[in-house]
Length: 207
Image (cartoon, rainbow, N blue to C red):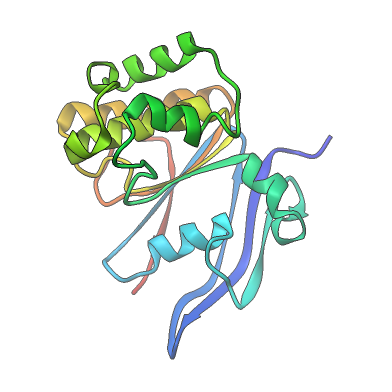
């Protein structure tokens, strides 16, 4: 059986004349977290999107369990969950409805599991309110519940603690620690230290 591992080798990506990613390489194994850091404009989000298959890298390879992800993006996407700057939530649906459709189309779960995920992220009290009525921090908590429910071994998180208070930042740290403790993999773009991630490997991108 192939080893559960994410490998990025010699990744290059340009934006017009700007060489954003320059020979980026790393390896992430089961039970590990990689923190991607760097100054504004260093290409952190671009790297995350390139790994997720949402941005095209002109050179280099991304492998999941030893296979080039571009040969079978559907299988790779089934094994990962991507959480960007703006959570993928529909404004006129409630948080609960969003998770039923956003995550329910890829991973079956019981209503009790949905309730438990919402409670774990502190979003149970706002679960039945339309997303348009929620604060940015509340939307982030609802989206984090979706990450839990996804069942994906690989989490790709772009500033996962954005708009969260101190308690929320600690929550993100603990969720990541729990996931890697179960053998999951996490690649997270971070600007600030998150509690519980002291053992994470760091990849710093230069501008």
